[in-house]
Length: 467
Image (cartoon, rainbow, N blue to C red; front, side):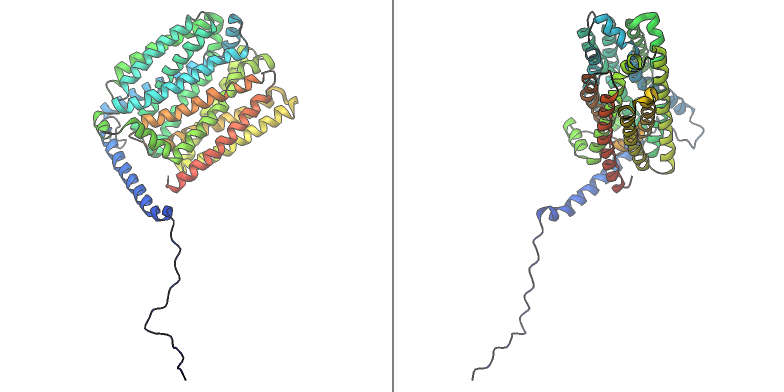
């Protein structure tokens, strides 16, 4: 009788096959290691950058640095002058839009093209000036673009027809955008972290003050010198900026040769690839573009809505516009206060919720309850303006935090996103007519909702990085 076969105890039991890991999972540890190395390299380069700007930024704990402190005071004054060129260029002539329309006999949408052209020129100027300033320094390209601004402003003052004015406004926007971008890059050269956010919030005071006074000043000057005289005044301001660039900034270059040496071998396309590949930066840049488009869609039609629909005088319009600018300043300071005690992430989250809520209230008030009249339009707009001021410095500081050596290119992309969104979306409400504020409210709500979602997405990634 045959013996039953017994299992062979000397052989190991067959183990179940493990599932094969996908290539993406296999590469994940390598990608994480590369990411850590990139962050370490970025930290080392940032430390070197701060060493190379030590001759410009004084140590606050020391009291024997009168020379450096004086240099910083001069730099801050120069930055303020550069930063306010944008509100002066855009807001000073806003009360004159109805006058320009009557002089040239053009429709409202045609006059609004002067704003669209300025936004397009700003986008081009930002994309060009930022990378150039990373390569050769901040002062020289700034001086060249101020000259472009002055020539374009003179052309605006001499414009024989609306087409000439539109083209000239594009070049004027190009020059003013270069000033704003390079000013932001200089701030990033000098500061990082919470200091960067706090300084941007303080710099917003100057911008906000000129946002407050520019429409009122433009309305008063319009009655004295006409709309062409406003451009001659802007030309005078541009010449003052040119003197400042030559006297102060050329002698106190913040992006020094030592800093530029750290970028040896880096191409412009490498900078753009790195920035566009950074999801946090990309989300925040797009968010800024949509929020800025919401603001500009209101500003582009505000002169017609407030003066012709609600019957405000040019002076009343300027005062109301100035009040909104003051609220923007208060929002920026509140954001700096919160950031010093918590983080920029909290500032952005609060601002995102407030922006969307204000636009929902605006659409309900002008669409469902028009009996509220002027206050139904202006009260939600003021809330939106305050939240916009709250978010803007935190957005810029968070987006620029890890891009110190390419601060010019990063600032140019942030600004170009703002201008591109404004150029495309700002005229949309005018296409549906400005006899009612409802189209403007719909456009603003759509932009604010998309921008708010992108803000939340951007700070979620910021939180993962421990910012």
